[in-house]
Image 1 (cartoon, rainbow, N blue to C red):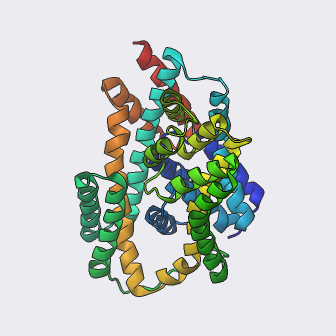
Image 2 (image 1 turned 90 degrees about the vertical axis):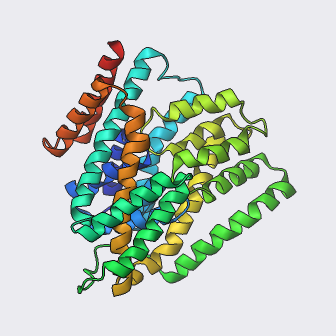
Image 3 (image 1 turned 90 degrees about the horizontal axis):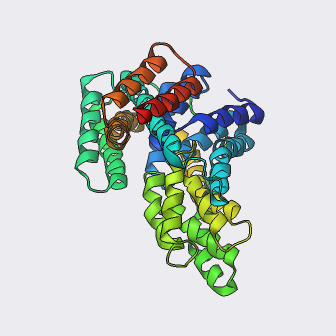
Length: 391
């Protein structure tokens, strides 16, 4: 069902203001607001989109938001979803670059820690809810467990995620064939195959042409766009994985000092929305005029181009019985990946004592049993973090 771009913007602005905790937590916020509350898409369709975006390079949570906006409001809705979800954290990161260090001191540290505990509850609820729907039998539960083992035993987190989904898909193709028919229509995108081919061609043209263009023109703006576009093109697994790539681009060139880079990374943990908005901080301190806007667009663009390029073929593929079996396995693997992430880094980085465990459990009960709005849970977590820090 189609909606307006304004509706998409308002929904994602709320998410952009309240979605703390990183990309895995964002998927939980999306599920709570869009799948359960607004019912724009069903659980299986949402899992399809998550699985697709996990396969592609780029910021998975932002790609999922972009796809949901595209499904609900067309191209304008996709742009509205990205702008609304990204703008709050981007503005905070630019403010931090200009000297507004809102999270310095013990109080800021307490709030940040409390928000990390909120992420534990959000991800736990997402894992539980998706497991009930997507792992209803022993076969798919076993695939989810296998995905956990793959992620845990693989040294590269991003490689482990891709390998887990690929293995889950192959296992589903073999073990999850059910005599059913595609439900049809629960994941629909108004994107033609011609548009998809154009998007893929543009992705590769920019990836190959920007370095040459930056060398020929000696333009700082093009150099910034090239650096951030390449970083966004080559990363699987979300914002944390892109940090080494960004450091290699901006620190050796002298655009930022190592201390400035690390300070911005610390601030990025305290703001809602996608971690890729760290690029706005780096661009604001870089050499190009309007560097924050250039860096922000450049780092998100490749992931969106790839998504638009693949989407036209996605719906036709999932209607094939063999592909639906593959997707059952892949969706079960997504549950396993979320489960592994719930432990590390979400739980291990947030729950360091009994106080944090009690706060995480309180937030989980508020979400799962009391059905409390996410902003109340976020406020509870921040307040709890302050209280724990004061003890």
